[in-house]
Image (cartoon, rainbow, N blue to C red; front, side, top):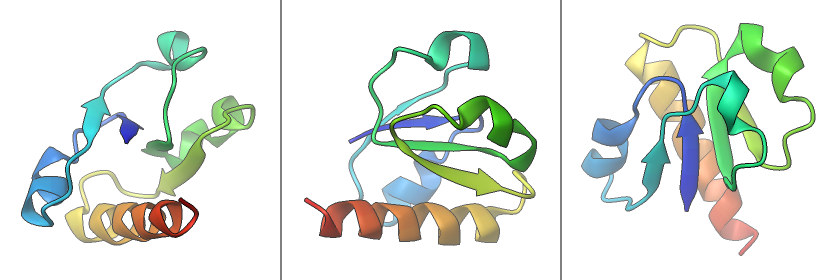
Length: 82
């Protein structure tokens, strides 16, 4: 599962035993890329409206609890749809 994230969630995924390709893209280069999940700060919402991937918006990127809860919930939702 490719993920797009502006701040690496590798340690969260590793701790949960989830294997995923995490690719840090900036807004200028993420368009046209293939991703299942995009994790970004709330202020990027307007730039991500056209994304075909599931978008997870984070209020505080340094709050590991918020990032973990939202990312894991999105991954569970993605896996249920498979």
